[in-house]
Image (cartoon, rainbow, N blue to C red; front, side):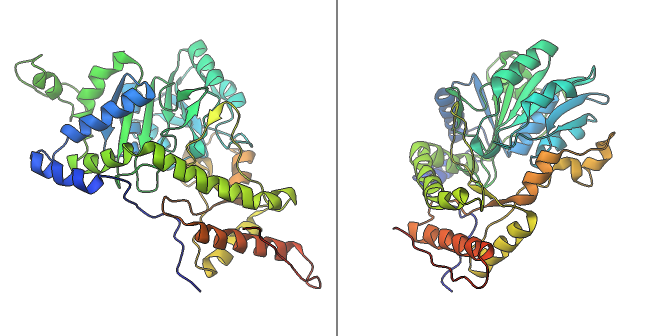
Length: 394
């Protein structure tokens, strides 16, 4: 067996290491230095976001967003069940209650048709998650939020440089959050950003981010000394990570194009299996422009998914499943006050398999992956007495 194909692999896109050396030379490594500011301005200008604040992670940005919505005990927040734990943790840590909503079968995003019926007098906000870099149905969601006076937070951890009706994900709600984790399109190992689209929230966001102090006002000369003014935490990233991120963000178009090529290679060479009913490929609605964050397969059932995952592993290829729906998790069960069944998310999660997708994935490696998938599924679908013949047009 040839060399293993990992699920993800960090990469250098441009001047990341040079910028780290520059940051050390500048003598400001603690944060909010030249590279942190450069990253923020780049994101603001490119995505037309009024204000962006870098954070140590998307989790930190979500926690800040929840605090800015003044969540507390007795409040409820509507969010998808099919998401990472950080989405719900940001709500629960403030004493509020997550109200889980089922998924759309096409995009796996929150089912916007089910949001309104989940609203109660205690509902204070809606958190949407743009799964796989494909936008939720934001027009409808924002209309519902305005009707009921609710805040909207976009968990766009997977959605940097993706768009809905021409608008950047993260720029549509009152607040948005980005992730620059190692597994994301643009990375600094661990990192994130808070997008502030409601200007009235900016001053508090700066205070919460800087340990609850008004230090940024002090630096601007607006106060003669800074002090503790609100509950906050240390949500400022190191200048080292910002320097690395700056090198990646400067190559945003090139990185996105490389991921588009990988994504469409998979789609082109696996579509015959979809036509034969052996799997389902991802869907991107016409009003969405993806950033090609991930490529997944939906297999016929859990048994097939798990067997294919094991087969690929035996061939040196690491493919993985994704989230367990939060409502079915040990922690999520604590917030269930009805039967708790969210059948679409439960079904999709049990059949989904993510394929390797990273910047340096080669065409030869992709052929190995495609051929291994095709051979396994064709063999599983063919009676033992019939020989399997596969031809791949390269």
